[in-house]
Length: 126
Image (cartoon, rainbow, N blue to C red):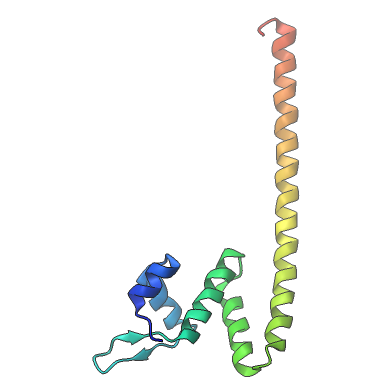
């Protein structure tokens, strides 16, 4: 089955410019019709799914490109899975640190709020 750039943009809720950019980065490899129109294959759709998912999980386009190219080099998928796990573990560590920072910020804000409420209560304002 062949897909147009407009179909992909609509299906994945991205702009056609985004898809062309991924093509410039050699993440997608559409065929061209005689008139030069891009024709995306099922494989391109699969790659675009991986790119979108990777971006959602915070992977860089360079990391995504590496993971995709690893599959091209090793069709068993083992190298790709190993690298994806490696990048995934790094991303999980980043997210864990960020959550901890947010929890610390929340705790600090709650402490200040409680301190301010206490001051208002002591002054008779509440």
